[in-house]
Amino acid sequence: MTGQLAWCAAMLSWLGPAGGPADTEDVGVVEASTPDPTVFPDPDDFATGLAVEAAAGPAAPLGATQRLLGPALGATARLGYEIRRWVAVQVAGHVQSGFYDDGVIVHEPFQQFTYTAETRFAVPFRRFAIGLQGGAGVFHVSSNLLQIGGLVPDPRRYGFAWDASLFFDVHTLSKGFSLGLVTTFVGTPRFQQAGTLFVQLYLRLGLGASTAERRARRRAKQARPDGDRRAAHVRPVPARQM
Image (cartoon, rainbow, N blue to C red; front, side, top):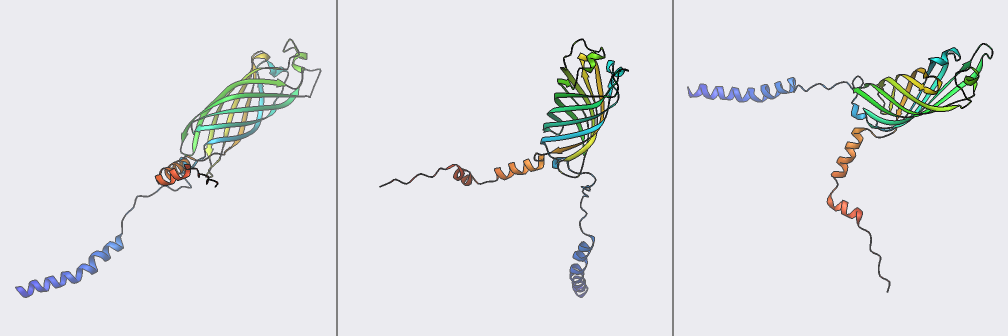
């Protein structure tokens, strides 16, 4: 009996190193899968802060100006500050360039320039965002042709304007670039409550740091030893002259 127990103990000691660890090495540890960054980029890596935007597309007059103005080309530029990915403040400039035609004066170039201060709100979902933006400002036109056409009673070429936009934004895999589609209505109450509808493609560039970068900077600052912090604020004492 004692011999059988000794033989079993010897067999177990021989199988232990060969069976247990080897099997563990073959099977390994199953780790949780991570999402592919090329498909679902981390929104914390997107830039916030200062941003610029350029847009272009067709523009069409709506309301009373339709009888004097035809379809036009429109361009928009925006400069803003993105406080968070869902809210920003910005200034915008809209330009529309087309032709005036009242049956007597035909194919006469006509431009309108509009400048507004806007607030931008978005609902982000991963790399996508849909939102609204709008504000108020002033406009001016290149000539007094609308007075000649009987739309306004005096030759004044400027007035109050407002704008409102609906946009759909897609962020690229780059830190700062996004692009999208924006539809904007620019209202000009002076022209008998008429306005212009812009349909544009845009490119937006964020120039600030990302949320992840700001978080890393805060951690690095907090990790500095107290001695280093005090040393950075100690001013050298000038030596006394004998």
